[in-house]
Image (tube, rainbow, N blue to C red):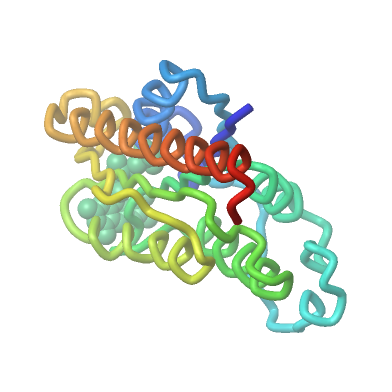
Length: 201
Ligand SMILES: Cc1cc2nc3c(=O)[nH]c(=O)nc-3n(C[C@H](O)[C@H](O)[C@H](O)COP(=O)(O)O)c2cc1C
């Protein structure tokens, strides 16, 4: 079973980021991929304290177990693909998304790049400015973790909840982001199966 897990960094549960994530996941579901959305925005999540315990323990966990980050790390580790979604907050990701990136990213580093060769992409809800920078903040999580990003940033324009559903170009982009993830996952699965059949490494 191929699975993709998405993390919604917006505190607005049914807001624009959530709508954009759903558009991407719709394409995945049409292709038979199992999906899950994990709500991150609005949760009490603290930042990385640079205690470096994850490098001492190397147990795939952050030493702080009082929020959802360890649950998120476990879901990331078992998924074939990871989607990060955030609205633009002062030209960057929300603090909850940043905390997830820092802590999950360091736990991954401490465990021989836990998310290596998974597929990743990001979606951004923007009113006017900062979409590229916000996308980059999430993109670097994927790149630093040995992950593979199938092109095209997912950016939807809107301010009030539901505005992104009137951004026709954004909707097309979300479809394409989803289709690219499907294509890459299928290609990777095919190549895994082929190497299994021939005994090639
Ligand atoms: C604290 C805060 C900061 C924001 N900063 C920006 C910004 O720098 N640039 C921008 O274009 N929109 C900014 N916005 C607007 C949101 O990105 C926009 O409304 C987005 O659609 C919200 O997505 P959501 O419904 O998923 O929360 C900001 C909104 C808030 C609440």
